[in-house]
Length: 272
Length: 316
Image 1 (cartoon, each protein chain N blue to C red):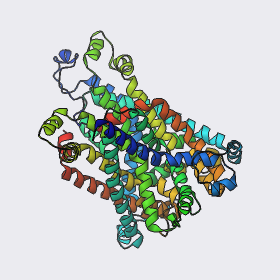
Image 2 (image 1 turned 90 degrees about the vertical axis):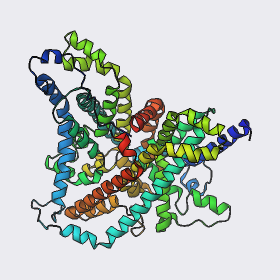
Image 3 (image 1 turned 60 degrees about the vertical axis):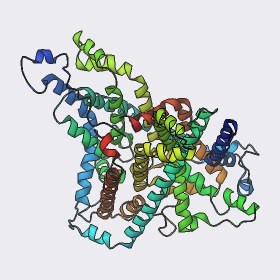
Image 4 (image 1 turned 135 degrees about the vertical axis):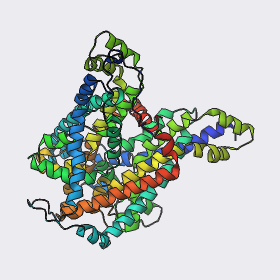
């Protein structure tokens, strides 16, 4: 097989795979632009009609604006929490010597293996006890720190040569000052990666917001979409318009920051 | 994989240890105080909302708590005993194991295949990689909704089948088809992630081995089977562990795609726990389910770790 044929074969297989991957998305967009009658009969995955008013209708049928706002507030809180809390802890684990440091870190690693739903029931009753059901506090505070971010940043910090910090220390900079002035500016790519991961996690999260929100007012976009599905399950065009709206922000973030995200995965997956 | 467990624990003298030579103490006091201040915020959050719940769940699983009453009647191991006799648990366990096996095998095969195809200087590499990654950044709710209607009896897929003269099944009304769909959906969603992991692994492989093999007359398949696959074992281990964690924790996809049905056909452990605890108010029983799952995950991961042997080398 010549090199040329081999490359063509590669493209053929990759394209076939791409179709499988992409069809659900195409169908989602196409359906969102059809009339209700068309949704049951059409077998095309490319739009044949352009009923943009479906979006306006879906937007009006459920408080999507409010869902967006709730998701944004929650995501912003969680991203900020991860950036600050994870970074501080990660720096301590990467650079400071303190008692029980290594056992503590192993304990953090072990937490990664615990299924969320082991902790979800007690965490739920805890949050209910604080009176945080149906509040932003309930959505955000329990997820202000996460183990994944600590590991990611610690790996990154550990890879930065210590000489720079040593120099700052000799010049009389405090430990906290060294962190803020030397480490943070040097680690922007890692922070950006973590921010994207955390945003996507928060935007797409389901079980926790499902449990701690009761009113339509406090629902995040994913919970809102699931309940919208319950009510509009037969109007596929409106349902898909809602689904597009719920997916779009995460897609945009992904497209804009693809490189950082992919590098981040490589970073956590394979560092020795 | 690896997260190294020897944190930046270099013993090289920090600049202030020269001063510290006057008081030969193991830890620098100021350093320990600063470290405590740095670690405290994250640790407090994790301790309150992860660690304490684990301990509390262990206790709750020994009670018949209904989720709201102030008292939690202690029942000893009764929940676990009842669980062992509950056909719903065995059904759920069977479903979860099939699901986990399917997602692991298909995840490894598809991830590796696409990565091998992309591991060449071909045009549009970044485009393909981005495309295959799209499902991973889509929310579970949105993905499951779309799949559910694609495979509706009067949906797109059956419409296509009808055109070629095949009567499509009621996909989500049949427990086996429903499980197949759930498995495919999960693999579809994690494909991009697995591809990126395998691609990174492929790029880290030493080219010299392949050149030597080529000189020895090894064909493409032989090279893949005898060199690439064995060398990528650490990545495969990670992909499988990831698949196990995903499937044993799976909830969102199932909740939206099938709700656990038909007749328990896709009731994975996460869904079973949710139904008992939050639908039926059996919080004690629900936490017992969660704990059983935790032990299963730990056990399976440990066995995997031992078996693959990759754990020892990477967890220094």
